Image (cartoon, rainbow, N blue to C red; front, side, top):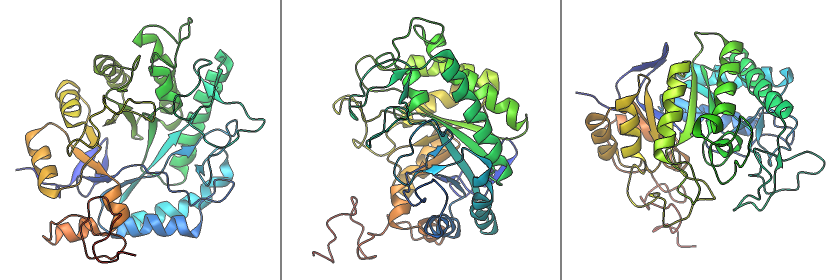
Length: 356
């Protein structure tokens, strides 16, 4: 019978359990995107805490874009030695570590200054109120090259894998969304065309890192918005990625552009379980699910009753980095409140012990 503490393998990458720390914006890099001692401490604490695999926060692959505040970056070789410290620490503690690679496009709150805001079309972001400039074919080619070079640097820095961020309204996700992708060339229109930038980016990454290095993707099952990508279109994109050789798919959903009444988020645990299970049963590649994974027994049942290979979670590990070790010791209660380390307040805000 499957358990959350089973050892598993993804494309030769050995994972000591089915728990994955999902990518989270950490905000502890320096102003240039370089890792800092504070960032090292976060990842080492997570690895010591028992999680089998860590996916980093979104890491900028391009110096063409303005960095978000204290965002990780890997747009030139100078970043490699610093990240080697991070990967060595994770490996000493027995955890695999994956770098998430991203371009953020119009999902950027600060002033971009003289740098362009990339996007598939000139459309204002619903949530961030930034208007991208439509990328030329040359800029799309530059994006592909930046992702490929970022992946190669991550491999040199000792990361066990990379994950392409094509979810939550970031740039690759925008190409998949009809509302934001209104192009009339080969990168717009049908889902096959809207997926072209993603497919070509994956192929460029694969060519750069070689056939044996694991490459994952994070993708929305649906955008949950008017003129958003549908689940049927997601299935088409994932099927094509599987044909091209993607090694695993992490399923999420929605973005800041989503309409609250259309998204399943926060309605029940395992927001995207049904979508991920459908994909896992259809595709010849491992599928991971993220979103609302909180309760040990619920996650155990998910693994046993579905074709999903692993579960991703983040907020519980922010509240208690050693949560997985505690669960391994058979204390299966929820993550402790970060305010008092005693209560199990689900939102981690109004602590029952520290009212001030």
